[in-house]
Image 1 (spheres, one colour):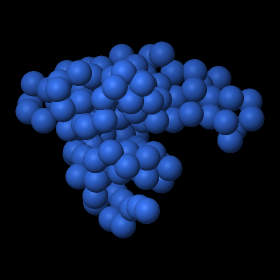
Image 2 (cartoon, helix red, strand yellow):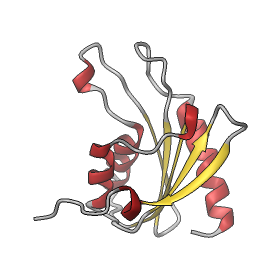
Image 3 (cartoon, rainbow, N blue to C red):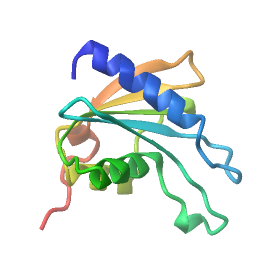
Image 4 (cartoon, one colour):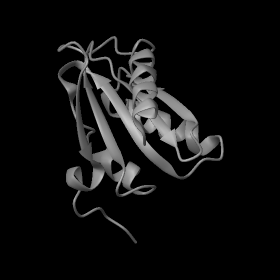
Length: 129
């Protein structure tokens, strides 16, 4: 992922965050997943009154990408208050497609400050069959 792609990915994650459905937690998350062909897929968290049915932004973006026929990725940006990293479930689901995925964390509370990590550092021993 080059700098221009990273900039576009961050902008897409920030836009996606505005579409989040988070009436219970008020914790809005947007994700943007970059396919290796340059296509960006957006996702937002979608909460449910039955909390266990909530869908994270990262998995929403991944589902959109897979549904569109994409299964190879070169980066993901996640925008949320505090610049939080993906939950364990999202880490595992992303690792299904790219264990070395660059992850750009955008802190919407700190002037969109960016921190970059690698998925392998977040999930050093993913489950595989």
